[in-house]
Image 1: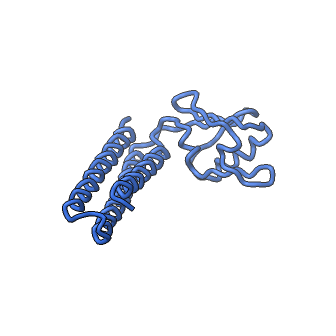
Image 2: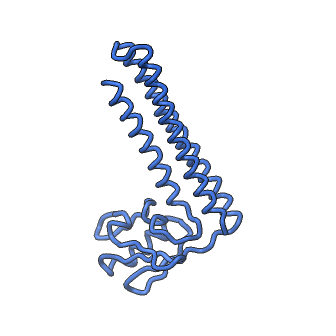
Image 3: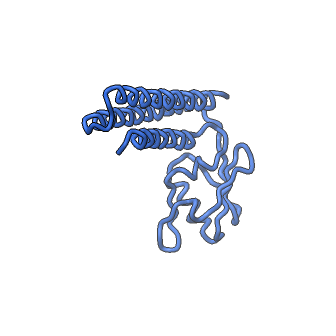
Length: 188
């Protein structure tokens, strides 16, 4: 392994941590309807003798600001989809018209908004922990490369400086994502 591939590996790992943070944020209810409120979560539908994810049996859209619409590929599975959504305990009560399910998204209370903001903060802190772990792995790679005589002492210091710059950039992105999500959650 050389320094360039080690840097790319650290960057890729940090990007995965940030992507995971954004995915977790998309599942937090802010009062606005979003397909990710039901799509990214593990909602399982028992149909045709097997269990599948919701997005494997239906199209999920948001035709209005406060409504999620679930259109099953096969209308005969609408009862199974309804049951799967209710069993997921998300606080949603789907309404069926026989062909599609409409899920009204209620406005969260002030107390619930504060809880969601705390949850978002926990997600952001977890992401920062993952970023610091990636940084540590990168620093360890630098030491290993120096011990293997791939890097000189000065090159190792430059390598570690690059790792730190990447880490700082990713931490700023995580903080910015949290600030944006917190504002979205707390704005009435």
